[in-house]
Image (cartoon, rainbow, N blue to C red; front, side, top):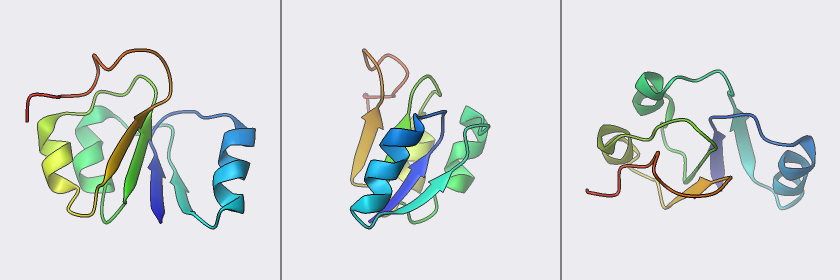
Length: 80
């Protein structure tokens, strides 16, 4: 499983993902506009406050899950 972490996430959370054998790419400085290019072949995208536009979701050809590490989903384009 390939995971892209696009915001700051606790070291304990990253360690837990690593323990299950996930291939983790962590880039907490990514801007919303850069996500489409960075998503690559990630299966999972983890964000906190970074906006996830429809174009990013469409670019994630292997994307199966978007995790919002926090409350609400107002930063994720759910219309597509």
